[in-house]
Every structure is written in C-alpha cells, then in structure tokens.
Amino acid sequence: MRKIYSERRDFFIEHFNKLLSDHFTLQVPEAGLNIVAWLKREEDFPMMRRITIDIGVRPSTLSFFCNRAKLKPAFVFGFAAWTPAQIRESLVKLASALTDTGRNPSNETRKSDH
Image (cartoon, rainbow, N blue to C red; front, side):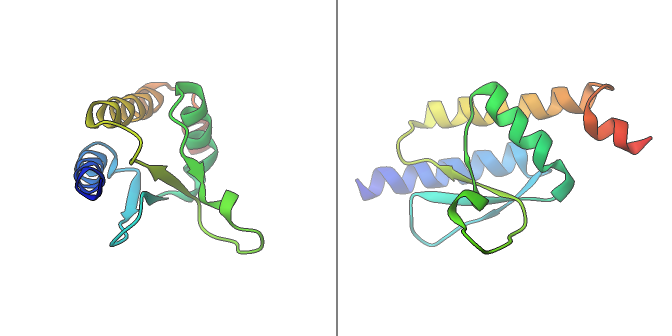
C-alpha cells in the first residue's frame, strides 16, 4: 500500500504543479495522504471555492480543520483514494474551469479590476 500511495502522491504533485502552479503553492509533507494547496492570491478564495463546488472537485478548505486559528486561504487535497487517471481528470477539470473563468469578462475577479 505504501508504494501505491507514494506513486499517487508523486503523480498528484507533478500534475498539480504542471496544471495549477499559477494559482496555488503546494505544501508537500514528507508523509501523509493529504496535501495543502495555498492560494497565491487570497482574494481568489471565494471564486475558487465556488468553482470547486460547481465542477464537483471538492477539496476541503483548510479553515474547516481550524477552530480558532486564522490561516491564509488554502485547500486540502486528498489523493490516496483516487487512481492516477482520476487524479489527472480532476486536476484537468479544475485547471480548465479556472482558465474558462479567466476568459469570462463577467466573472467577479474581472469586475473588481475595473
């Protein structure tokens, strides 16, 4: 099992960084079955949360695990239960949704830029 989890972890990290490094910074632990992805732009958190819900890619928010601590916005991604194909599909789906949102002039991020 350790080998499977290790392979999935490495696969997740590689593909996440390839597809989503413009939006997130991964905090990669030495061990464990989850990885924290810190948003590079805190103001993107509401949009990012909405997109993950809309497309069915549902990482937990880091704040879910904190009672009193006020942390910067981040998501916790699990990878152990998913095959490499499922991991790739979910990451591509998220990256595509973020790209589509960036092209949509009616999205909230663009509105706030004017």
